[in-house]
Amino acid sequence: MKENILLIDQNDIGIVRLTLNDLDNKNALSEMMIQKLTNAITESSKDNSVKVIVIASTGNVFCSGHNLKEINEARRADDTGESYYLELFETCSSLMQLIVNCSKPVIAEVNGIATAAGCQLVASCDLAISSNSAKFATPGVNIGLFCSTPMVALSRNVSKKDSMKMLLTGDMINSEEAKRISLINDFVPEEDLTKSVMHLAEKISKKSASVVSIGKEAFYKQSELNLFDAYEYTSKVMTENTLNENAKEGIDAFLEKRDPNWRDK
Image (cartoon, rainbow, N blue to C red):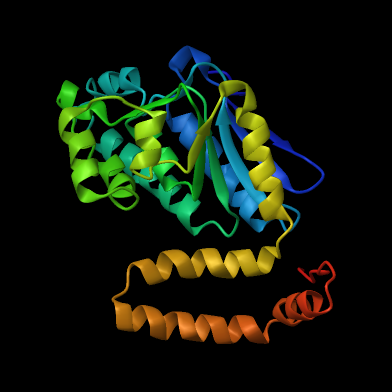
């Protein structure tokens, strides 16, 4: 398998673009692709110069999910593939959790088709913009392999009824429907997609990176709590955030009608 299946590029304002580039396999989440994405996101998370991560693709398929050829090949093992499948789905699940837990905002730039674990990848990102021709599906049920792991990300971003419809029918939905059910934030003409995503990423990159990190972590943590615990937790987060030097700088800048000078380390 070629080594350049994931292209990595960082511009001078801290936006990292991770581009899936395995056209022969429809940008599948192969073992190698999962590992390369995991490594790139881990490194970006540690890099103070990185402000935003964008996951994009080449070709007309954003990500087709797991590589079915690899899955079938694994059946030849003595255990009929059990150990391989467990490791594959666990490492993929770890990647999706890494995206959620990453200290940097992650934006999916979806041009083309996103199916199964590819749809899971979109749902796992903090934000998602697609082209108006993009399509999405969790079609595992059609081939006897219910999209159980993609269901985790899907059901946490889309309503139960809409999630179940996608999971039970395996039907493809268009970008308009994907926006309606909140799988994506918005869709734009294909020729405007990268420009729109980079505009959004640049806007976020101008915020305090440490404050954005605090907010992202709190968002996902409070969403799993009951109402009382969520307010108790976020009250503590807000208190710590208010004591942060960037909160003082941001409030001073607002009152003085000037741009803030963030003191991120």
